[in-house]
Length: 480
Ligand code: FAD
Ligand code: NAD
Image 1 (tube, protein in one colour):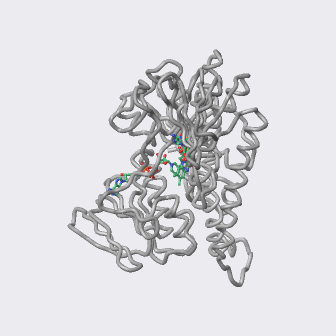
Image 2 (cartoon, protein in one colour):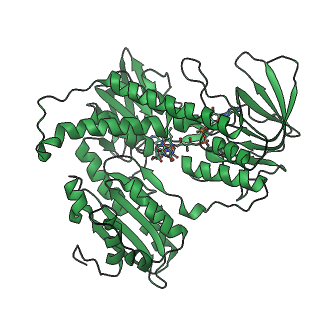
Image 3 (cartoon, protein in one colour):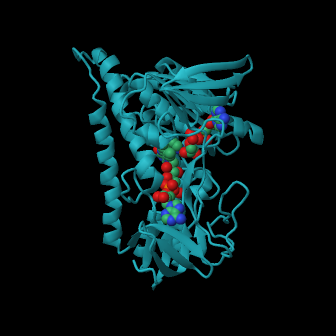
């Protein structure tokens, strides 16, 4: 790149190639627009990679390790129940981590291929929006390229929240990205935050042999989930051996040699414990550093989120923002739908996101998944409701899989049978929730699910039976 800015013109320039930005770029190109996508993600070795947090350091590597560690644990604890005798199950963390890294490389490389196939111009470097829809891309060598766009889509994503009293050093006190790349199993692992990351990563390292202590500030476990499901989940996490301390506020952490001393306060007073690694997983915040030059007119709120309307349009004409950097849950699939919506709206097509029907999945064992309202939310809203549940212990397929933990819970309106929320804890809950999302997206009633044929024997029958249980008509379990 030359230091004398050259100007190239595009219909759409997307800043950020995570799961919100790259689908926006691809859909815009599919809509016959001339598109560029800029991303600055760099790995530890300095290489650039498209895909954002999700592909490089989030959804994909964490699921690779969750799968491997779960297989390891099942081989050790469960295979004997199937009549499979293994004399010795050994862990080769090097191979496990190599597999994780290879999956990430394949998936991020796939985005290059998708950009090429769809005619998206990919720039690797920092993108900054300047007034007048100019984007300046700064490459690794510091050279600048100026591009002009009719529309700009901001998709800069998010970064981990850090705690001042727990100073991050990337070696002993780490974030989720570091914790996905440990090259040895820490004998003692501390996790601050019993949120989604804390539970998923805590599960990975516990299954591989760490003693795991999780410190959670709130008294309530998984407050965003239905509390019946959260209660069941807490039981299973304890069974796995996660030592979860609720109502515990971390007051500080100090590294001494190769040990981290963690201090926390709970109702009983101050406590301290020592670990070999400490993961801070207390949430993420929007990443807008250096994104907006002075005078763009884009508004960022007090918590760092870019302000947008329901269609992800900012206060500036033809400037849009999507994904983790705007309001709503920080989930890859939410960002993807926003990116696609914006690309379609830019092309003059009708598009919207149904924010009421965004599924959540926690990929632990058992998996936890839900869509719609929890029973606490329905109760607080005052609408009369009915509930049906079905335990996986009554499912033939779950029995065959040796995975009978958990249940499906459906909450429906008493007046018109509308499905208000579906909550699952159990085997493949993240896959099963797809049917629930589709049903709610199409405004199906509970009776619609009751009248839908589900193949036998499948896990999806649990959803069917839970729908029948809503009206006390379950066949395969006792109606209460
Ligand atoms: P990001 O994925 O953060 O991508 C933004 C990209 O923009 C990055 O590459 C960044 O470098 C780049 N960028 C930022 N600013 C600039 C700039 N000025 N110029 C150029 N480039 C820029 N979500 C799920 O739905 N399912 C999961 O299973 C899941 N697991 C997760 C596990 C972990 C450990 C973590 C940390 C997150 C997980 N998430 C999961 C959340 C998910 O990763 C995010 O919701 C998602 O990545 C957000 O997408 P995004 O495109 O908005 O942002
Ligand atoms: P989170 O908001 O899910 O959980 C953070 C937890 O930390 C909360 O329970 C909070 O009460 C606790 N906490 C905050 N400050 C604390 C303190 N000082 N001491 C003790 N506890 C404290 O955030 P996360 O787990 O970091 O995940 C970040 C985002 O990434 C989430 O929005 C999540 O949706 C997304 N994510 C999604 C998935 C998935 O979809 N499976 C997986 C991982 C991450």
